[in-house]
Image (cartoon, one colour):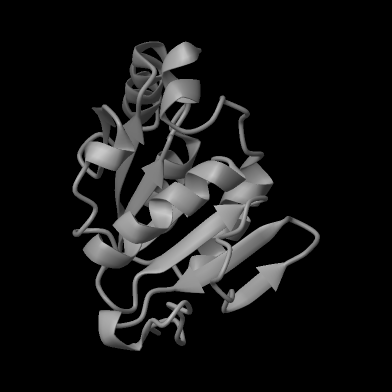
Length: 168
């Protein structure tokens, strides 16, 4: 739909296997708050809440996908642990996130970098499917699944490389 393309990327569902790998790679757990930017049908939110017992927040620009995501949260009985916000993730405060997942586009990732470094706390993990963040070195990569894990460092140590070890 035009809403999601205008904000950052068209919708292409991420396989459930890849969603699980993204959350495993990030070290998701019950103390985490997972933000999925451009949450589509809500599958990352459902997996984060149901399997990893994390709090999950999806941000989606397409109102039809917002409805589908909210229905998925109801169907999988995770509405108390997960929610979907209708809007533009560039205008959403991400500071509560401990994990951010994205499957956007290369250009959108580049535009998103300054927001992530400004709003996310040191140690926050960012997992990107396919597209990378130019100038950032991933903490780890899964070449088969096309996933990159980045970890935000303190602003004073970023110097083009916001990475450190994931918190354990």
